[in-house]
Structure formats: C-alpha cells, structure tokens
Image 1 (cartoon, rainbow, N blue to C red):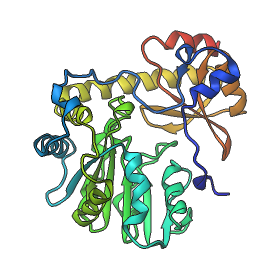
Image 2 (cartoon, rainbow, N blue to C red):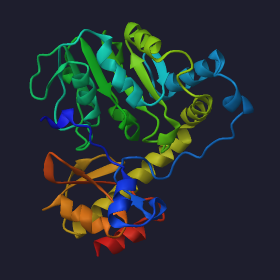
Image 3 (cartoon, rainbow, N blue to C red):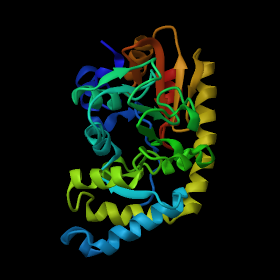
Image 4 (cartoon, rainbow, N blue to C red):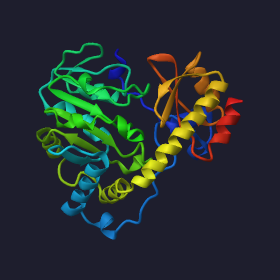
Length: 316
C-alpha cells in the first residue's frame, strides 16, 4: 500500500505512556513540528466565548491574514477550523480523477483524496490535480511555482512561516490554486484549531459553503488576529527556531545521527535503526517520530527551554 494512503502522524503520547510507563505529563513530546514556545495568549473578550463570531471580527482576522502573508489582490482568504479541516474537504471541490502528490510527504492529503475516490500518483506529473507541501514534511524540500500542475493545484504552506521569503503565495493568483496556511505550527497553538485557505475565489467560496457558518470559534478568531498583527514576535521566533534547530542538529550528530533535512520546527535524521532510537529515547520518556516507509528516518521536533537537559541525558 502507498505510504500516502495510510494515516500516520506524530503525537500518540497516550499510547507511548501505556507502553513505556509514566503519565502523559511526564513525557517530552518531540514527535510533532509544533513550536514548543507558543504565542502568549491574549486577553479575550467575553463575547469570544458567549456570542457567535460576528462578521466584523471575521473580517478583521482576514485583514490581518492578508497583511501578514502578503496575499495578492484578487485572492480570497478563508479562515478554517484547522488546515486539516480544509484538507479533508478539498477533494470534493472538483470531480474525482488523478492527483499527483510527490512522495514522501505529509500523508493526510493523499488519504483524503483516496477516500474520496481519487487515484493518487506519487511519480506521475500529468494529473487533474496536484498537492505540494512547501516546505515538505518530513524532509523540508522546497518547490517552485513551475512544479504546480493540474486544474486543481494545492500548495500546503503549513510550515512556511519559518521562512516567509520562501513562500509561493504569488501562485494563489493562478486559477484553480489554493494555498493552505496553518496557525498551530509556527505559533505553537495547535489546540486553537485555526488555518486559512487562500486563492481562487470560486474554490474558496465552495469551501466556505462546505464548512457552513461560524466554522471558526470566537476565541480562535481573536487569538489569530492578535498573533497575525504581531510581526515582532514572529521575527524573534524565527531567530530562536533557527538557533534551536542548529543546536539540535549538533546534539544529534554528536550522538551518531546524520542530518537529512527538515525545517527549523522539525529535523530529520538518518540513523541505523530508527525504531531502536525511538525505543532508546522513549525509555527516557521522550517521544520521537519514525516512518513506516523508511526504517532509517527519525524526526525530532524542538525541545522547549526545559527539555534540552532531558534530551542530553537520553543521548549520552
């Protein structure tokens, strides 16, 4: 079976704790690419909790998104309850056919297309639709606008906020193109469940209709707007992530791992036996990410400030 057709994710601390012991709170979770130093939560208005999100608040969030990502004129912007909610619905935007999704990559895209009856192609360029994760998860590969093909073109930039100069947001002006943005990764607030779909107004309107009214919760609307209007925090965070990812590379290379790629939110390593490394770290209650399609690949997210010493001891 294609690796794309099987849903396989980081996380799963409950299962790790059941196997290796300890409570969930005892574990250091490095299996995801979520910023371990999240955006500080702002004070929320009472209406965020008690009232349905109004049009004005939603428009303010959209305006902040347009400014932060430099969305080209003529492109629509839709807040969604997490990028995954959009990924699950995208295959229904056009009649099923063939979709090109270069492998390896985040497997939720292909799982959604396959479930909707599409034929998923990993190494064929001529298709009705294409999906490119930019930068790619797990190896950090960057794409070019010319790589996007098909009538429906999906560009998943969930991890691109670490390097805005690499964004291909200009591709959103091309008919049939949708650019996905995630709030949970860079801002470290995955539980807020906020994402954005940017691009072809007709496709964005169809996605909006699928989700229905008030799809994004009031607290998420306010938190998202405040964060997107804080470029200083974003710039400082990019600097810290670059420093921390270099520190992690140095630690892992000293322990015998070879760097393969990744982003400054997660690093990918080639090791002799990834499952053995995962077991070794898990015995110290540190959870990592391995892949069913490559027995040598180990992926680690960044430790928070209080996690570095634990990782150092586990690698000793």
